[in-house]
Length: 305
Image (cartoon, rainbow, N blue to C red; front, side, top):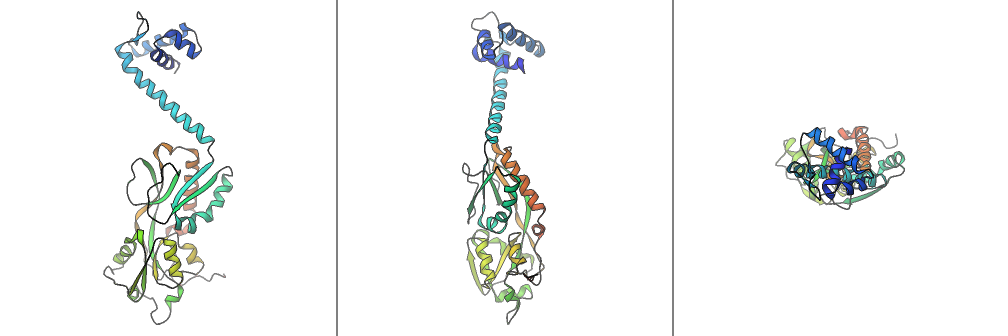
């Protein structure tokens, strides 16, 4: 490394003396390092009879490679150094994910990393990572994103949910065919969800009595809890409402979503300490959550138990 540093300095300044002053060593020490490097490579790097010093053809070929290597080392060192002083993490995700799953768990992250401050950037609509304004995204990846590093977290699933009230009465939901008598609640940005589930249930041509549409899952779930119809839910983000008895899964069939949940950041930032900490924590939360693998079906639980 000392020999490479000496070579880079002489090549850049065209002077053994200037390079020696810059490296805070003697001129003879620089000359010795260059000679050792030339012996190791088996070729001359400088024309020593020229003033100022000129590189040989081999030296001119070698210099940009060495310079680029030092530039990369300096750049990554700066990232690590800046990262050690950066304690604010901005996470971009959907409103439903934030309200129904992430926010209740952030207290644990703050307890583990008390020096970190988490900010959430949410959206009701489908979006790409807000580069330059957020550090990391927890998103449902629908397409490949150029220039971004992404890592799969889990494959979610879809299932109809409704108020327990719809399991009783004149038009009680007992089989998937009964959905024809009810309003189906859709989400604008995920119109394919219902069709994916209905196709798997053998009801691809089903025409509901009425249709409602919202711009987020959280609004669709609330409408379902208010007995406005049957929503298609994505686990684990309706698990809390099912656990409290506000919603119930009327059928056993739960269908895998076509897309995977991913953690996403800019490729140049994937080694940042704060992003790696958040990803490790997020994966731990996912692995410890049994509802990630699906919702319980059947009668709702008694919230008083």
